Length: 539
Image (cartoon, rainbow, N blue to C red; front, side):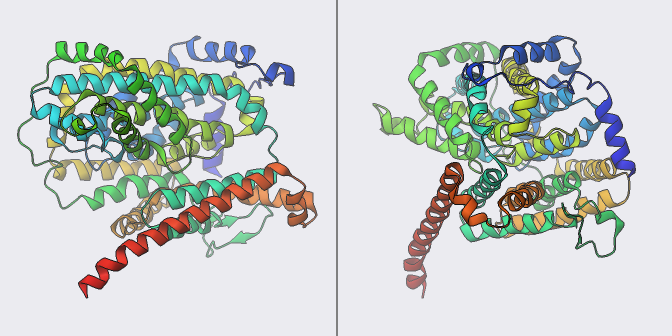
């Protein structure tokens, strides 16, 4: 009860303008690309005062550092600093978290180029040509190309979202409760089956999240699996759970190391050649646009994200190149394709969150938790009633991308050295922050205990290659799916099958979900067939 009161108090601070709904105009106006009244209100929210921008530079720096350190993911940084946003208004909190997201996606490419150590999975393909360029003494050119491609790619991704969000609103506003249930089920299926090599482990991880989401009081007022504890009446607290499963569990996994890198030599970095290389990115427009387009499309698919976009764009650039044999030897096209794709996927991943209320991955799952804390629900109702917030988020991210070009340039030298920090100092300090964050959210010992339980759960899942993101996203969406299912049953009178056949959009979504499951089953079958010959030879 104390937490609910605190939440209500926080949400009332500085949010008077956020509570003013901006309705979407009539359908003839909806056909336009931009909702001008909502855009005007969004500009006032962003630039009416300096407060929304206070935390953007710190957020970019945090994202760059966490992105550059191998083993410390961007989602971990966002979950760790999420409790700090509870004293901010909604725009401030989202600007802070999205700036961490923006900085982190680029940060992983720095160590991939300098040391052949991708800071995150979204920078794997960056190392294919970035590190060979560094070995040739072209590390400044590679860093400039990666920074330029990241800025341009992310700009294209958010610009596409800015232009398409209004036409998309016309579509999503036609979705009823049954369609939302199917969208959630489809999204969870994609996340569970495409995020890891093992389809079965992905599905089990998603099912675990759904089970955990049912703890506490149901939408019909029934208590479930509380075991007599008052702390579980409101269910599993999502924010401490995310801090534990993303941040603390990763630190437990890497605790055996001395440092994050054993490489002693760090290549010299000069700002002049980096700046010139940033502008030389425009010499490769086809590679830049193709990589950005691939990133936007793949980023919009839940559960795929920047890691897949990075590799797919690199492979496509190599396939369409006039000199494919040079890829992997250190050429600019490889770096540009990889970095433009993983950065532009940010805008794609925000599409599902804003339009459907479904996070596309771990980072947007943290954003969804911030939405929930400020009593903001992503999806059709957000676009319909508060289009100004949607435009403010998109425009804020576009400005953040431009700031990334300046901040990233200034801290490149520091990013090259940060992975030498001894883990005996890093791990205890970050774990203490995790415990503090859990207590700050819950206000009781239940917060740190939730962090500890989910840290152990996340460590076990990572150790046995279960995708933790599938569990967290299912935990977030389980309650929403249950509420929409109850409404669907009420509308249909308990006859969901007949109701489904009456709604063409529902039938299309159901067919897409079945196709996704079938594709995942075929993928698992191919993996099993490939492993059988090696098993037979081993015997």
